[in-house]
Length: 185
Image (tube, rainbow, N blue to C red; front, side, top):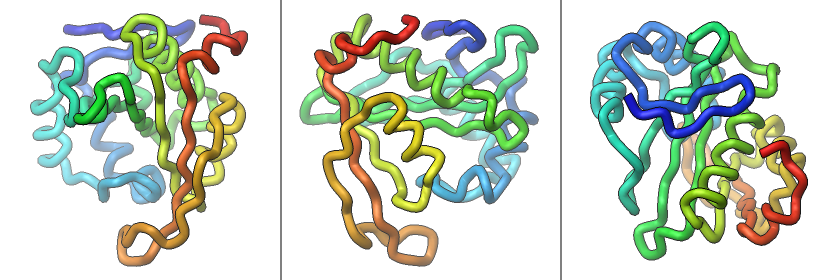
Protein backbone atom coordinates (compact mmCIF):
# COMPACT_ATOMS: atom_id res chain seq x y z
CA UNK A 1 0.00 0.00 0.00
CA UNK A 2 1.57 3.22 -1.16
CA UNK A 3 1.34 6.21 1.18
CA UNK A 4 2.25 9.26 -0.86
CA UNK A 5 2.56 11.57 2.17
CA UNK A 6 0.88 12.60 5.38
CA UNK A 7 -0.23 15.95 6.73
CA UNK A 8 -1.13 16.88 10.28
CA UNK A 9 -4.51 15.11 10.05
CA UNK A 10 -4.51 13.26 6.74
CA UNK A 11 -2.84 10.36 4.94
CA UNK A 12 -2.72 10.50 1.14
CA UNK A 13 -2.49 6.89 -0.02
CA UNK A 14 -3.62 4.49 -2.72
CA UNK A 15 -7.28 3.63 -2.84
CA UNK A 16 -8.14 0.13 -1.59
CA UNK A 17 -11.09 -2.24 -1.78
CA UNK A 18 -12.11 -1.48 1.80
CA UNK A 19 -12.76 2.16 0.73
CA UNK A 20 -15.68 1.10 -1.49
CA UNK A 21 -18.59 1.94 0.84
CA UNK A 22 -17.30 5.40 1.78
CA UNK A 23 -16.08 6.13 -1.76
CA UNK A 24 -19.39 5.17 -3.34
CA UNK A 25 -21.36 7.11 -0.72
CA UNK A 26 -19.90 10.46 -1.74
CA UNK A 27 -19.23 9.73 -5.42
CA UNK A 28 -22.93 8.87 -5.82
CA UNK A 29 -24.01 12.21 -4.32
CA UNK A 30 -24.99 14.78 -7.01
CA UNK A 31 -23.92 17.68 -4.77
CA UNK A 32 -20.37 16.26 -4.51
CA UNK A 33 -20.10 15.63 -8.25
CA UNK A 34 -21.82 18.88 -9.28
CA UNK A 35 -18.60 20.61 -10.42
CA UNK A 36 -16.57 17.47 -11.15
CA UNK A 37 -15.68 16.19 -14.60
CA UNK A 38 -17.65 13.01 -13.86
CA UNK A 39 -21.23 12.18 -13.01
CA UNK A 40 -22.47 10.22 -10.01
CA UNK A 41 -21.11 6.70 -9.70
CA UNK A 42 -22.98 3.44 -9.38
CA UNK A 43 -21.52 0.98 -6.88
CA UNK A 44 -20.09 -1.06 -9.76
CA UNK A 45 -18.42 2.03 -11.28
CA UNK A 46 -16.93 2.90 -7.88
CA UNK A 47 -15.60 -0.65 -7.50
CA UNK A 48 -14.04 -0.61 -10.99
CA UNK A 49 -12.51 2.82 -10.39
CA UNK A 50 -10.88 1.68 -7.15
CA UNK A 51 -9.58 -1.49 -8.83
CA UNK A 52 -8.05 0.62 -11.61
CA UNK A 53 -6.21 2.96 -9.22
CA UNK A 54 -5.41 0.88 -6.14
CA UNK A 55 -2.05 -0.47 -7.31
CA UNK A 56 -0.76 2.50 -9.28
CA UNK A 57 2.44 4.08 -8.17
CA UNK A 58 3.32 7.66 -9.04
CA UNK A 59 1.81 9.03 -12.18
CA UNK A 60 2.59 8.71 -15.84
CA UNK A 61 2.43 11.97 -17.84
CA UNK A 62 -0.92 12.23 -19.61
CA UNK A 63 -2.77 10.02 -17.08
CA UNK A 64 -4.74 10.99 -14.00
CA UNK A 65 -4.06 9.02 -10.83
CA UNK A 66 -6.42 9.10 -7.89
CA UNK A 67 -5.39 8.78 -4.24
CA UNK A 68 -7.45 8.32 -1.09
CA UNK A 69 -7.63 11.04 1.54
CA UNK A 70 -7.78 9.26 4.89
CA UNK A 71 -8.37 10.87 8.27
CA UNK A 72 -5.44 9.55 10.32
CA UNK A 73 -7.23 9.55 13.68
CA UNK A 74 -10.37 7.74 12.47
CA UNK A 75 -8.77 5.77 9.57
CA UNK A 76 -11.85 6.76 7.53
CA UNK A 77 -11.87 7.81 3.90
CA UNK A 78 -12.92 11.47 3.75
CA UNK A 79 -12.34 12.03 0.04
CA UNK A 80 -9.92 11.54 -2.82
CA UNK A 81 -7.46 13.61 -4.78
CA UNK A 82 -5.95 13.35 -8.22
CA UNK A 83 -2.71 14.35 -9.89
CA UNK A 84 -2.18 14.81 -13.62
CA UNK A 85 1.14 15.59 -15.28
CA UNK A 86 0.88 17.25 -18.68
CA UNK A 87 2.01 14.89 -21.47
CA UNK A 88 3.99 17.60 -23.27
CA UNK A 89 5.86 18.69 -20.13
CA UNK A 90 5.74 16.57 -16.97
CA UNK A 91 6.91 19.54 -14.88
CA UNK A 92 3.39 20.97 -15.15
CA UNK A 93 0.72 19.39 -12.96
CA UNK A 94 -3.00 19.71 -12.43
CA UNK A 95 -4.79 18.61 -9.26
CA UNK A 96 -8.31 17.59 -8.34
CA UNK A 97 -10.02 16.99 -5.01
CA UNK A 98 -13.35 15.48 -3.97
CA UNK A 99 -14.36 15.65 -0.32
CA UNK A 100 -17.26 13.59 1.02
CA UNK A 101 -20.35 15.59 1.85
CA UNK A 102 -20.07 14.08 5.35
CA UNK A 103 -16.62 15.64 5.84
CA UNK A 104 -16.82 19.03 4.15
CA UNK A 105 -16.13 22.30 5.98
CA UNK A 106 -13.36 20.81 8.11
CA UNK A 107 -10.47 22.19 6.04
CA UNK A 108 -9.59 18.81 4.50
CA UNK A 109 -9.54 20.12 0.92
CA UNK A 110 -7.17 22.95 1.77
CA UNK A 111 -4.95 20.71 3.92
CA UNK A 112 -4.80 18.21 1.05
CA UNK A 113 -3.95 20.96 -1.47
CA UNK A 114 -1.14 22.32 0.71
CA UNK A 115 0.21 18.77 1.12
CA UNK A 116 -0.01 18.05 -2.60
CA UNK A 117 1.66 21.33 -3.50
CA UNK A 118 4.47 20.76 -1.02
CA UNK A 119 4.95 17.19 -2.27
CA UNK A 120 4.96 18.15 -5.94
CA UNK A 121 7.05 21.30 -5.65
CA UNK A 122 9.52 20.08 -3.01
CA UNK A 123 9.83 16.35 -3.69
CA UNK A 124 8.99 15.98 -7.38
CA UNK A 125 10.47 19.18 -8.82
CA UNK A 126 7.23 20.33 -10.42
CA UNK A 127 7.55 23.81 -11.94
CA UNK A 128 3.87 24.82 -12.23
CA UNK A 129 0.51 23.70 -10.87
CA UNK A 130 -2.59 24.67 -12.81
CA UNK A 131 -6.18 24.51 -11.63
CA UNK A 132 -9.34 24.82 -13.71
CA UNK A 133 -12.39 25.69 -11.59
CA UNK A 134 -16.03 26.03 -12.59
CA UNK A 135 -16.93 29.72 -12.32
CA UNK A 136 -19.92 28.80 -10.13
CA UNK A 137 -17.86 26.74 -7.66
CA UNK A 138 -17.42 29.48 -5.07
CA UNK A 139 -15.89 27.21 -2.41
CA UNK A 140 -13.09 26.11 -4.75
CA UNK A 141 -12.52 29.65 -5.99
CA UNK A 142 -12.17 30.91 -2.40
CA UNK A 143 -9.75 28.07 -1.64
CA UNK A 144 -7.59 28.90 -4.67
CA UNK A 145 -7.48 32.53 -3.61
CA UNK A 146 -6.66 31.62 0.01
CA UNK A 147 -3.75 29.50 -1.23
CA UNK A 148 -2.42 32.50 -3.22
CA UNK A 149 -3.04 30.97 -6.63
CA UNK A 150 -3.00 33.52 -9.42
CA UNK A 151 -6.17 33.78 -11.53
CA UNK A 152 -4.83 33.72 -15.07
CA UNK A 153 -7.97 33.42 -17.18
CA UNK A 154 -11.74 33.52 -17.20
CA UNK A 155 -13.16 31.38 -19.99
CA UNK A 156 -16.76 32.28 -20.86
CA UNK A 157 -19.02 29.36 -21.80
CA UNK A 158 -16.00 27.40 -22.94
CA UNK A 159 -17.28 23.95 -21.98
CA UNK A 160 -20.54 22.09 -22.53
CA UNK A 161 -20.82 20.44 -19.17
CA UNK A 162 -23.62 18.32 -17.72
CA UNK A 163 -26.19 19.57 -20.20
CA UNK A 164 -25.35 23.28 -20.29
CA UNK A 165 -22.60 25.71 -21.26
CA UNK A 166 -20.27 26.47 -18.40
CA UNK A 167 -17.57 29.03 -17.69
CA UNK A 168 -14.27 28.34 -15.95
CA UNK A 169 -11.42 30.11 -14.24
CA UNK A 170 -7.80 29.10 -14.76
CA UNK A 171 -5.55 29.42 -11.70
CA UNK A 172 -1.83 28.68 -11.46
CA UNK A 173 1.14 28.79 -9.14
CA UNK A 174 4.85 28.44 -9.85
CA UNK A 175 7.28 26.67 -7.56
CA UNK A 176 9.17 29.90 -6.86
CA UNK A 177 5.90 31.54 -5.78
CA UNK A 178 5.15 28.60 -3.48
CA UNK A 179 8.60 28.81 -1.93
CA UNK A 180 7.96 32.44 -0.98
CA UNK A 181 4.83 31.54 0.97
CA UNK A 182 4.99 30.63 4.65
CA UNK A 183 3.01 27.39 4.96
CA UNK A 184 3.37 24.83 7.72
CA UNK A 185 5.10 22.34 5.50
